[in-house]
Length: 485
Image 1 (cartoon, rainbow, N blue to C red):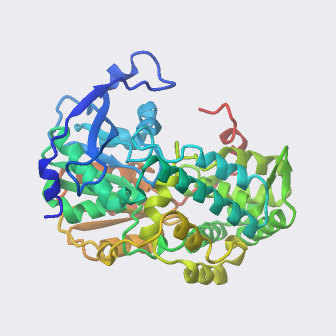
Image 2 (spheres, helix red, strand yellow):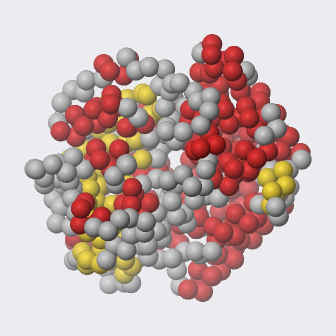
Image 3 (cartoon, rainbow, N blue to C red):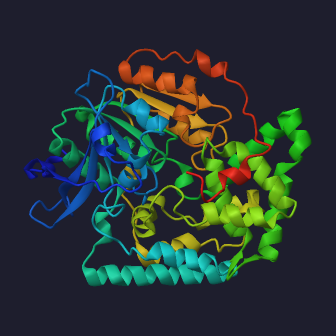
């Protein structure tokens, strides 16, 4: 049994003050929030070895009746903090509201992210942002980034931190410790993006403890997106272009978006935009435009953003890069934790990058094809076992959402995920991007019904009746305002 080594681990939940920022007085009591620490083995194969602590929170379910099977939320990334990113926003988060209906919601910072231990090169994110802001040529930027990761690796070795203790499978084992420490016999998993990979692996090794699974934009172990993201990005923006072209009003207002995007990126790459002591390249603008496109709530602004940037609106370009270009758009981010996991699980990538460049040359830019392989060979060499990359087979009831504009996890990933899941239901959401579970009442009601009776047939008829997306023609400046909550 893969989890047999955990049998000797007796974990407890040690309550601690949440110390949430920017919340009103009485917020934690109002929502029934309890925060604390749970110790897990640094190396699950050594039950007598060093322990590290994970930061965990439990939020009381809403309604008069609370069911015994809570929902565990597994965030994306990897490397993104969860607890401090979600808890302050319970009152406006539609996802949290849905998942809390009648059930407690459990959140945790994956090891090496957020407040959980260990802290892996906390200054690395700032150093990488500073390198990107210099507007260097692609090869020069790649060398500076490689040096930053090499310095991080050296500092971790000095501290005695083994990056081999960071993997998707390790997170799954951490989750089982959390479950037992919280006194949970069986729970429901709700995961987004990279978190769906964690959930899928849990479906292989923790089957008896899982009642149901919601995969909100899945990232399966057998996905080609692991090797490179350029193709997914290119396909996502191409889908936005096609939808705009199919709507007469959008086509008349914005024209050929694909061409405008390519021309804008090429112009900024050839002549970077000076912003104080920083220089904005086409790579930086694309990196900042991606978070706008990946959110289902903001993807409607993408045509307007491309059109205004193409027309020479330099102030808008600066605002977009300032708002989304720093790598922390989805919360506190640990690039060291992310790369410790992704490097061995992505495999060799140089040939994939070269192939993607042939299809999307402007989006791919001039980054060296072997950039990722060289970085990983320096920072976290080696590869995960081949069996980890196999499709997941399971009969656990699973609900799978995917969006038509998603530049992170393409539609094919959803179908690859469902191949061997005998009780999987696919929900394709047109006009949506990443994580489309709660874009409207239709998609929300499907999730609500599924959580109530996971083994019942899912009524998907409302999906066909949804209206086409209405692309925004204004409101972008207000969205990018630094004073916007």
